[in-house]
Amino acid sequence: MKRLLRSLIRIILILFGFLFIFTLPLVFGSAEDTVLVDFRSFWDGLKFNFQSLIQMNDSSYLELFKELDITNSYQYTMTILGGSLIVIIFLAIVISILIMLTPEKVSNRLKNGINFFEAVPDLLVILLFMLFVITLYKTTGLKFLQLYGVFGNKPYFVPIMTVSFLPLFLLLQFLVKVITEEQNQQYVLYAKAKGIGRLSILLVHIMRNIFPLLILQLRTIVWVLLSNIYLVEYVFNINGFTQQFLKLLFMGGDFASLVACLLMLAIPLLVMEALAWFISKFIKGKEAVSI
Amino acid sequence: MRKYRKTIIGSSLLLLLLVMSILYPYYGPKDFNHQVLVKDDQGTVIGRAPFPPSENHLLGTNRNGEDIHWLLLYGAQFTLITAFGVAVLRVLLGGIFGIILSLWAPFLKSYFKDFFLTFRYIPSILLGIILMLPIVGNFSDAPVSMIVTYQIMILVFIGFPSVTLFASDVTDELIKTSFVQSSFLMGAGRLHIVRKHLRPYIGSYGILFTVQQIISTLHITMQLGLFGMFLGGRNRAGVFGYDSPEKPASLSNEWAGLIGQNFSEIIRAPWAILSPVIGYFVVIVIINFIKKELEENLDGFQVVKKKQKQKKGARAEARSTARRGLFEFVQKL
Image 1 (tube, each protein chain N blue to C red):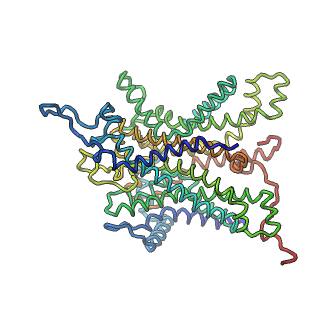
Image 2: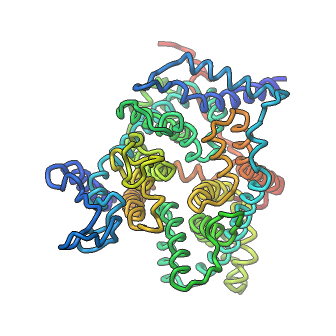
């Protein structure tokens, strides 16, 4: 009973937090030449938004949302997200193993190089990619890299490359750090003493043990990917989900549509959290693996 | 031994940039070498802005024919001051609130988390756009100071929950240490704990948080600039050659505004947008060096890193902690 009450309070709080955050701009009613502070309109807006969430059988409910090309664009955006996630995981594991196999002098320098990339703004990467593709086209005349998403084009390669560039370094940094820590463990020393090669220790033993940590880290990666995709779709003018979302915003869509869009954007994060939850539960079950 | 070499060099570089930017009206050309058309001796037009980088225009010019390097120098002050101010406000408000949350009202923490759950699922750039759209989205005749105040409030608000929770986590971790626990057991009040035991940490963590928040503010202003949410609103008579519909231009020439207003020119004049982005990059790199060094210096007391390692439920915390109120003194003096 107590738990039920608690979760009820939580749901109400989440809902009201959401309403509060998105009604906040109404505190500042924009008059002709000044910006007013107005708590009444805030309260009215709160009530209005709440009502528009509840009235589901209204015919105008989610009207704009239905008009937009949601399913296609959502599928497209999620394909980019999934594709770049797979690319990132694959490349990060391969490169981190390669880094660990190189001699210490080289690998230290490589690690410093990776650390440098955390300061690079995502916008710079996106713009440089864009200019690179354009100059490639201008100088060679080859058009094998599709950039813009106009005329119903659906480019995949360049967006995935651009989006995954920075998160790749993020995951790489994480993996290198974790593997380095893992190499000080007793079992690695034991395996070394038994004469197992470096590569097979890395691939068989260490990889198996850091796999749960990798899964837990994926949420952060997806988070960064999502905000990157948002910028990329705007810069490359790709007709993805976020473009639809922007359209909705600028056309002044109703609150319920906004909520629906935001929920759809949050789905990948929720999936990652569920995955992390299962993994941590699984590990708790067999305590032999220590994180 | 603690070293602050990078911090000192980095911050003095930034300070130099800021001072040069503020003193710009005293030495720089007032109109940023405004020059749209280049004519030869006979008066025929031989060139038209935007000009590429050359000897006359170090970083090229924008469509208005203004020199990018002067614009960058002049606009730096607004970008830097905003980032710094927002970061300080975030840390100040969030820190105070976080300490209060975990010392005086620990039961509220989970509710606070729930209330601001939205921030965990929606990228801050989206939040920024949604919240700023009503005020900044259109040409508004409201005074600039009001618009800037509103924008700064939104920027502070976006970072507030994460700073609060972070500060609260650090405080929780500090409360568990033995010296605070023994102080509690000897009957110290909460204010005493804050003043005597937490204050040294508040200082160093506060600076570290501020540096981190400066970086995140720089990122978000840059991204908002791309979407046309300039600091200080939009300037109506903005960009040369766009009469109807009017193209928004930055009023203050701060860097995010330069990014936004030159974005549509990326193919004709890539230097006009790349230079402010690279400017951001340089500033972020400098601040990142400072951050790294501060983090290394804090290594002796690694609350935060330890927190990150033990992810949810991965390891059960089996330590009992004494809190005020869980026990009573038998003899009250």
